[in-house]
Image 1: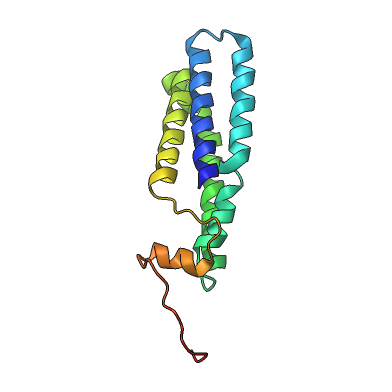
Image 2: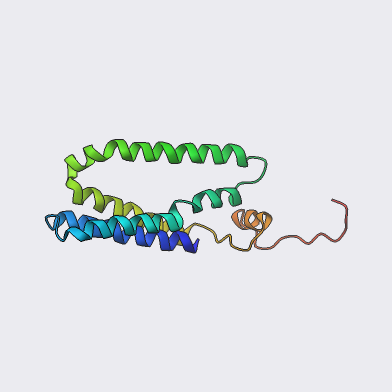
Length: 146
């Protein structure tokens, strides 16, 4: 969760700086390079790898394979859609508008991580499932029979 918050905060910042770069008539030129490198670094810290880890922690074993497959398909369809629509978006709302829109999406992702995404560090799958279902404590088993 912490990595997602840090990651989306950095991605938001660097999308904003890239938007400013295009708003400022592509000056200073180093800002574009710094923004792109910064965005890639922050994406790689959290938003790139962490969703795959979180998926494996949130879904129960019985449905994990199916849910992870659907989530990965959705991820790749979304990436394809962004890639295909980006040129049209730049024509419609300019490059600074496109990167500003991406910054808004990143900021909303950060808010989601802060407000909704549960902390899973150091917790068992059973503890995570209990928290997601609104149970704050796990029942204690007193005998060996189940």
